[in-house]
Length: 528
Image (tube, rainbow, N blue to C red; front, side, top):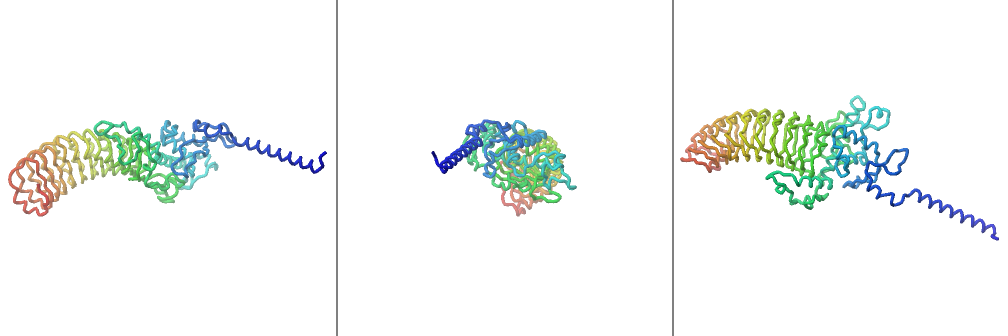
């Protein structure tokens, strides 16, 4: 028989064993097996619900997307509320901000942006029903209120759209997979001589590792990205300036209507997403010049009714300038030079009656210069040089009464120089050189341009005598008439050009001596 102390010891050992067994059973119950974890979610669609979720919180979705480049945004295993996800998604589709096919593609910039807005963004903006908001179902930011302290549902919705659109822009131009897909799509486009090979990227600046479109994160990293995709309001994101808020001013930690988006020379790659055109409805200035952006300028540009300045120069944009550009009634500056744009110049450009500067040089524009160009009475500078324009220079160009700098050089223009050019009384610079099909005489009406400083008519097919009336151009500094078919002698009257520094007449059929009056041209430095 066992003494009392032995019985007590056995009971303690038995109790300890039972406790240990219960602990093991409890742990096994709480921890799922390996087969119920990662592999399941890899094959699962993001909007599907896992096998189990807390009944008091509704469905929980584990979204398996590629982690963000910044470590602080690597929340790929963070749960997401599918109700809120679908609510915001539906509102985006309802307002045609994005296409459904993009929002359902896990590899698209639109899907990645929506996931960030719903799951990762600390601001947790939402599309909210006013009635539920007033009952306290959601927390409001001060900038969601109008001047009377009431909730403005429309403004709150626009704030979310703006934040979403800029997030799409971020992923579209800085995410390696998205940019790589863009590159693959662009390789087949034809510009220039009509072959894809002539415009194929050769990798000389090491932006792409090979012709298969593999992209290095370092090569497409933005130069400046302060506060982008952070908890800060978009009004503090680099390059973003909001419309002045009645209480907080321009720079404040909030999400308000974007007035200026300036990301010039910031190493942006990929395409410019339509969300920028559709969402930033109150933007006044959009400057994305000096980047590596590709794709086309969408027709949605016509929805930017408040747009004043559009700078997209020095990129790789292709396609035509959409006719919808004419719906932008307020632009002062339109700078699209140094791209691969082609097609005709839409006649609707004549509707931009406030336009002051239009720079379209170094593209592949074709066809005639539209007569409607003459409707731009406030236009100061028009650069259409180095394109493929054909046909006669329109007579309507003489109606550009404010014109100071007109450049039509290096095209395939034909016909004669319109006498209406003599009506541009404010013009200082006139480049119509290197159009070999332009023929006929030099219009004497050009002598009516008192402020003309530079006149470039070389490498055309001009004929006839040199106009003696040019002696009246007292402001003329540079006169280039070389490489034409001009005849006769140099007029004595040209000796009155006392400010002329360069005179090129070589490559013509001129004859006779240099006039003695040239001795009075004390500013002349180069004469050939």
